[in-house]
Amino acid sequence: MESTALLLAATFNAGTVLAIAALGLLINEKAGIVNLGAEGMMLCAALAGFAAVVHTGSTALGFLAGMGAGALLAAIFGVLVIWLNTNQYATGLALSLFGAGFSAFAGTSYVQHKLPEQVVFAIPVLSDIPFLGAALFRHHPTVYACVALALGLVWFLYRSRAGLVLRSVGESPESAHALGYPVRRIRLLAVVAGGALCGAAGAYVSTVYTPLWVEGMIAGKGWIALALTTFATWRPARVLLGAYLFGGVTMLQFHLQGMGVQLPSQFLTMLPYLATIVVLVLISRNPTWIRVNMPGSLGKPFHPGT
Figure 1 (tube, rainbow, N blue to C red):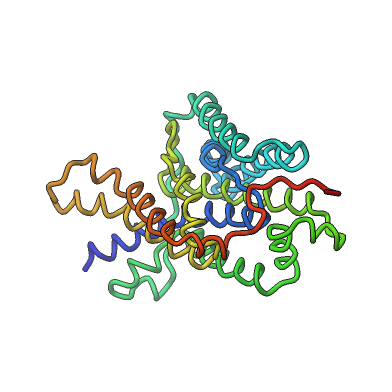
Figure 2 (cartoon, helix red, strand yellow):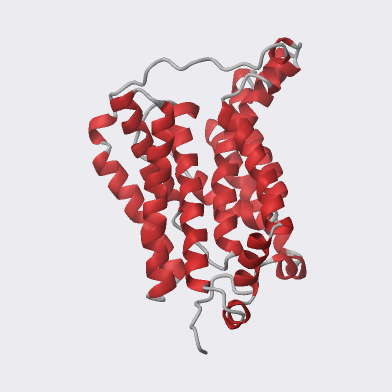
């Protein structure tokens, strides 16, 4: 029972990283923009967050620094693809490569640093419940904020006027433009908001999830978050469930190793990525399902007046 509770707790921690980043990318894609630079943004944000905590001792400032780094890189990406009409896919890949290289170069001096000892979080009374306490009520506040974010995004996209405008920009930017909405500005705001969430996910990795800095520590989580948006057919609640599914697969490899299961370590390490590929293949078998849920202008440039 105890090992199962610990596995569930680790699943929520690992899934939170993916969920926050994927929700940010979902906002981008609801506005019609595909940002393949999540991995690079998360790496730079992880470094920025870690450096901020090293110099200030404040995890909150670390999160703000990470979100700021993610938002800045996303804003640069947004200007390039929204105003200069560069190819979204090529620009996103360039951002990902830039983030990986820059974070490796700038983070050299932080490899040996250690963060202050973290406060242990626990919800009073609930954390003492057998099994459920260890599994659900002893997490960092970011885990619970992630769930609230997903629920808030459901309300925003499907119950608010601003969410309706955002979705209309993603579905038919020409129609939104004809109605007088500033399509480019709305898309830029969506891209920056998505970048800030990717930045928060990166900062969470380096300051809470694994409080240290090493080169390439995001380890493909940005790409899995990108795949999650398709896996969830662009629905926030499904993103959350998918993130916990992949988080559970990620943690399962360590759980199996601890139980002494005799499997090659390479096979266990590739389980999260294998699960990503399998799920995408299964979803792709029904292209109509994806076409119905996918924003109509996803990945396409917008040219006012055409």
